[in-house]
Length: 328
Ligand SMILES: [Mn+2]
Image (cartoon, rainbow, N blue to C red; front, top):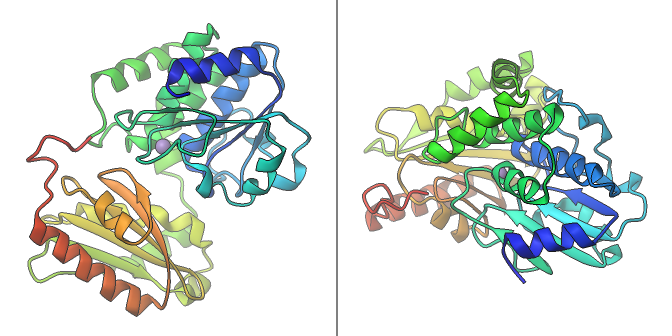
């Protein structure tokens, strides 16, 4: 059973939901959870929210403090996985056996297979847009807290309406949500312009050691575990560093390597026009064509060397989605 109608059908007939999203939740994950839960409660249903990790502290939207840790979850019947597939929910996976039914709403490639019903659309810019459509289908009024959560998710996943996934339908949905009470300036400041002092200091250090391939098309940054300790920054707060590698003129593939724990390397891939999802998949990761990630065990030096070799090989093969009109 797949598609929006299947998921909406279960939302209408079932009660007692647990909503979750991927570990290290981003604004799209947090906004999608909040909006869907508020909407289900509006229909008189019970809904809890849970996350493997706490939401980013700068997101101050109504209801963020209601998001539980896996240990705090009370009995529920239906689990709804948002903005990821089941293997990215972290410790929330331990609650899966309690679910009578698993629903999935997501815009990532390859999602939906493990769910009883899934609404997956990789052409959507944000899961929040899909939740917006679901709520409209359910007849839920979009009140200011729902509008703010949905708008925040869209702003997060479109980079503030700057990425290739920003189109007319995204802007029309965003305009509607602003009309319902979402606040653009506060949202942008919370998501993009509020960073810990330690974040900016570590960023400066990492930027000063940024590297690139001889032809300049692959640009990468690396953060060792000892760098996080020295600058006293939680590795989870540094995933956006990759955007600076993407900014470099002539950069076609931007990569961030982060040693988040001894021997555990998180890799972020970004591009304006190269299908970096293919690169992420080589390293057992996933995501979108122009923004994807992977997690690899090994030393930082080994992983950097192997991934850069693959990135250069990918450029040799030339999967230019802009040229092929398939970037999103
Ligand atoms: Mn998303």
